Image (cartoon, rainbow, N blue to C red; front, side):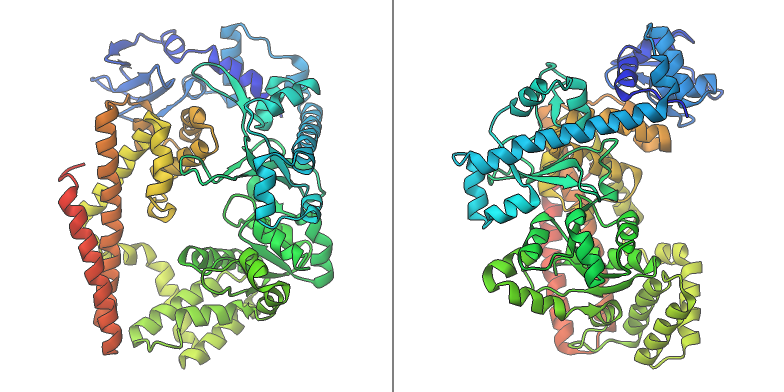
Length: 600
């Protein structure tokens, strides 16, 4: 397959101004800060084809087509991506080296080997810093966290100094180009002034290695309690670093996983390190992302048995359910380690010692028992309706199991627990699957107007995120991740926030334009092509209003759910507890309604 290096593609795009390119096909007329024309992709009488020079995007408000300059050439000339790039290269007078274009496989292999070497070289700098430079603040932090010399050596931990160009100078002396350092994500470029600077500064460095122990990226933890900076900054995805396909410390844990015949999935690096320090050397963790199918398949190569060890809070439980679903789909034998509230492996090791940690692991629950405990709590009597709903939730997870013998076995066990014929459970599951969309609409506890307000609020928040990176950072603090929807706009907000915390706000629009090229979502297209009408004061007010609208949406949904539970609850004490929760939520809702604008 033809191949063009990323740095050449970026150069081609940079020299292909979208206004100049489109005007070679038909004229554009200025309309404020944008340009307009009759759409070339559908018949219309009033111009709805809009081009943004500042964001280098086009979008038609009539037919919904939109994207960047490459997408325009693909649509207009009816060609593939590579051909569109070649057309733009010829127009810009940029030569694409034949060996780069025709010898993709060998070039890619050489490029990857170069990236592996670059990461290993910069790791030597970071590791030496932590071992030898005792005056660094990172060294003091590591000792306070109980990170011993043995841990530092085993996990090859490092430290970045409080310098803007330490890694840049070090790698330049090793004769790496700035393009190579930029591709690896070790340095960043400020697109406003063109200055180059280190991504990782004054942080504890965790090298991320692949399955065979090659360094492919870094995760860097802040040592200060500075609310304005991200707690963790991670390497961006590169040809050798795909975070959804990596597991932290797998290169150290894989032999132990084989020997013990099970793996332990923890939430983060420090939890894995705590496990290994306690002699539990078969522990790994997802790398900066939720647990994925690819990571599960990776573990399955070493053992078919997995223990899940996530936090016991609500977010942790949601992550456990998601992990169970993934593991069951691969027919993996799954257990859950139930941690004490407000504890994690690191705190347990420090406060109670390795034996306590091993004791908790030995007390793991089979996934089915964990689910039963969660949906049929021993301290609560469920109504018949609640039992039915709980059993369906469990059945939906069991349905993920591919092996029919295993699947039917668990359904039989559930039927015994419910004192219900298996056929009824299976019938109910089929009904729920066949009518899930309709059921969701019928049971929606929120009015359409409230939901539409929430959707509009997300659209404005995305516009604000593109207006200034400050709003991305504030969002990370002010709005829990689970309050953002899974719509294209919601996912775009998550991308903007994540990239900003990773020091890449300037690249948000190009990345989202690539997503638009793939999805062609009309709302996302409108936001990307529209120029912002906000000034600093109006943007701040709009942000506050949007946050309140979204919180109001979720509080209203929770109130509706609790009210439904109250109508089914038989126990008077439990009814009182639920009513008190509703009362507190309504107080919050009233406070929000008093302070927020009537219209967003």
